[in-house]
Amino acid sequence: MTEELPELSLSQITDGGFVHTGRWDLNAEGMLIFAGNAPKHPGVYIFVQAGRARYVGVASRSLAQRLYMYSRPGISQRTNIRLNVALRDELAVGSIVDVYVANPPDLEWNGWKVSGAEGLEAAIIRSFRLPWNRRGTIPTQMSSALTGRPPTNSAESAAPSGSAVPDQRTTTADRIRDYAESRFFGPARDAGRSIVEISAREIHDALGLRNAFPSVCQALSGRKIAELCRVNLTRRIGPSNSSTTAYVYELLE
Image (tube, rainbow, N blue to C red):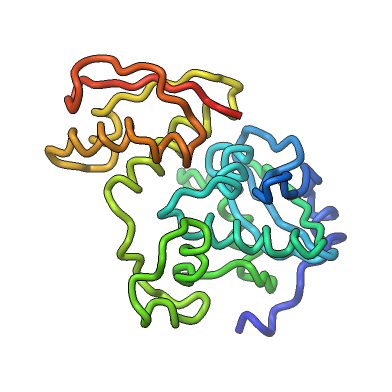
C-alpha cells in the first residue's frame, strides 16, 4: 500500500542525479509562478517541500513547458489544476517548494526504444510515498475555485478529494483553448517568441472534430482565450468561420 512506502528524501534525490532548477513562488496578484531556469528538454521533475519529495512527474518534450502549465492550467487540465491549488495553498502559508530535475538517457532493449525519463518516473512512484501524486480526477471544489464556475450539483460538490467524478463542464471551446495553450502559446513563450499564428484547421483536425470550424473560430477569436492564455488577437487571416481561417496573436507578459 502507498502508506507503507518510505519517503524520498532530498539527499536521496540529489545523490540520485537530480539537480535544483528553481522553486515555486507567488506573484503580487497571488498567481503561481516558477522562479528558476528549467531546461527545455525532456526529463523527470520532483517537487520538494521540507526536505521530502511531494510530487514526481515527467515531461516528454520540455521541462520548462511542463512546469509552465502548472502555473497557467487549462480549464480541463485536471492534474495541472489540482497541483496549482496545492502549490498556492502551501506557498500562502510560507512553505518553500523547490523543483529538482533529471534527464536520464533513453535505452534500447531487444530493438525496442525505452524512455529513460518515463521509466525513472514510474520507478520512483512505485518505490516511494508521494502525497501529491494521485490517480483520478480533481475534486469539484478545486476546479470551481480556479475557474470561477459553481459545481453543477450537490453530489459533485460533496465528492471527496481524489474521487473519480467526471467533469461534465468541459466544453469543446475549453478543449480548443487548452490545446492552443499547450501546443502553441506555451512553447512559443519557452522559445522567447512574441507572435503566434494558429490555423483553425490544425486545431480542428488535431482534436478530431467534425464540421466544427465555426466553433473553433469562435473559441480562437473570443475574449476568453485572451484572458486565460494572456494573449492579444492582432489579426485574422482569411474569411471568418472557415477551414482556411488563421489568427495571429501577440503574447502578453
